[in-house]
Image 1 (cartoon, rainbow, N blue to C red):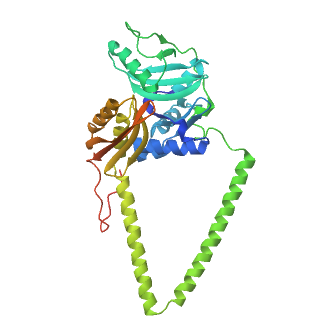
Image 2 (cartoon, one colour):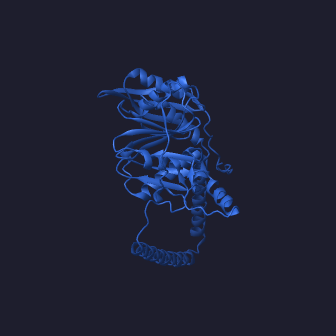
Image 3 (cartoon, rainbow, N blue to C red):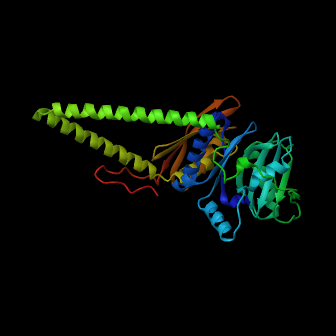
Length: 355
């Protein structure tokens, strides 16, 4: 079964992050999905793609896989494969030369930049319904991804052709690949049996060592408690215990306050401000202030990025804090006050849990 992109969330990883191993890529992807879509994304089925042309991840939104399996079971159907339709598009149509594949489902377009016949970058975009606006939308997409005009563009499926629209190409045959199947493990490859056994042995040894260390620490603590019987030391211990509890309570309050930040809105604001022609370099949000470092082709583009950031929901004001020439571009820093930031929670009361 092939899934519409309406049910998916996708990211492409930045090569500068140096995520060379599957576990690093999976941890990064899981964090990104949770930041953009909230805590519910923690349990979304995840599939990775990692090869010479690029890397990224596709997540299946919550509950979709379970509903598919339940419907199949109710009708006596066995699901052999559940994977994103865009992966089949790449497998069937991606040429060896760089190309841009556009899988159109209504106005939702899965844009796939390919190289060497493999996915290089994948993103979901909404295309204007009006045919006359499509050319401008495509030009903006090419500019956003810095795609040269020679890269061929292939529309797949989608609505009927209209005047001035690129021709739609029918997919000749859906090709399935086990490395993108949500019914299999979330890892792109499985450990060999001997390696898995070795890992289990290491884990058991570590568990035994941890238990031994814990028992030794407990014995030492009991001996220390027995020796400390004087009132003075008892008072000192009580003060230390109370201080440690206060520190723990404060740390918990700070953590829960951080979790209560409107992270999806914060990331959306940062993303809006650093779109082409600017390029984001650094992101920092401490709960009240959003700080972005980026590059732009000139000063006006930097000021335009600040104006864009200032118009985002939750931002009270934004400004260019620093601007300097850096070769053929300018490097600048944006600072914005976050009006919707959660106020610090007193240690005497417990903050509400993050939603």
